[in-house]
Length: 210
Image (cartoon, rainbow, N blue to C red; front, side, top):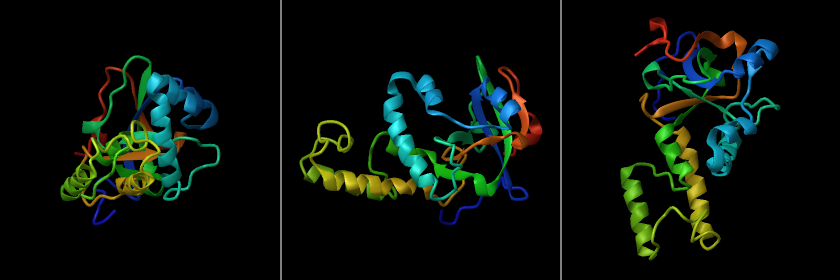
């Protein structure tokens, strides 16, 4: 992260927002923490979960190089950095406002993450993306989305290598934009919880920092 500064950091901690199934609270009460599991992802995403899990597996591997992952944790927990840009709970969900030590937060660029979910090359900037598209066109290829899965699978290993190498750029950003920056954590600890938001409730003003 070049030139980045977290404007919400207070005393080495940052307020984050996450929405989870209400059953998560039982784990927090009984075990003092909540961790994500594959079955939660599968239930939440349904038929498209196999694709997402492959991407999540890559994220877990790379993120654990940056923030140490507890041995019993398999997947990350998604969080928003701003009350203005966080998902609100509905149905059988709860929203958690948590205060997390900075050294336990994995910040990343959500817009770049969309490229990963599409199994696409993550460009350095708009000029780099333009050059990449031109390269693909010069090679006579119809698109740049099907090297890992799709019509070109197994045919262009050098392109796959280039694409996967570019994915690490999701952890690089030089500005703080609440519509781009997202956060992941490995667990929700009971002592981090500042308040719980139920469907229809508003986030208390003291946690709205922007």
